[in-house]
Image (tube, rainbow over all chains, first blue to last red):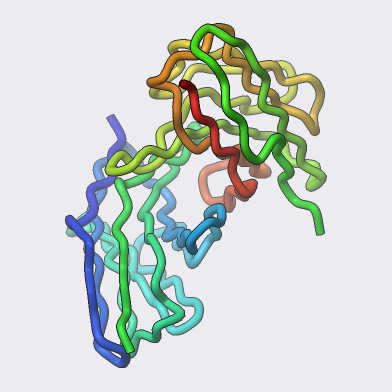
Length: 111
Length: 113
């Protein structure tokens, strides 16, 4: 069945460090891929998405490229800020529109 | 600017009590969802409704029932609450279709004692 695997956390970085959060997926067909972010005490917000192979989603300095050959959608940011501290979820939807999530990873950025 | 609205935001229940979580969306979306979020487990789908008049089980449906009352509203009912149902519950909606964004409510914190 469909599944999403994220790297284990938590991750702690210093401000202005480079961020990579790995995400791989297993799916039949061609899913759409998403990164959602959850700030403390809030619901989930869409960070970025890509709907077909080689698409790059980007938002707020974050980027992720849909790589069909490696079934991956890794999240990157060149210079993190304290305000990026949050929980990040990789997710996918298949033909049935159900959103399948990874387990999430907590990012803490220290000044 | 309402989007997806769910109530209540916080609730404490005793084991065996029943309650209903309400959810409404004002975006004319076809599909609606209920998820639960537990530490280390990510978000798991309880039930979803692909369109008005249909509901389907997700990954963890046991102990829950849902009603798609109309296009706007999708409620989640716990008939006999158990401590294992202590969780944060999120309602969500989307236009439907694989590439469309799913929008989430702010969550309902439920504790069963």
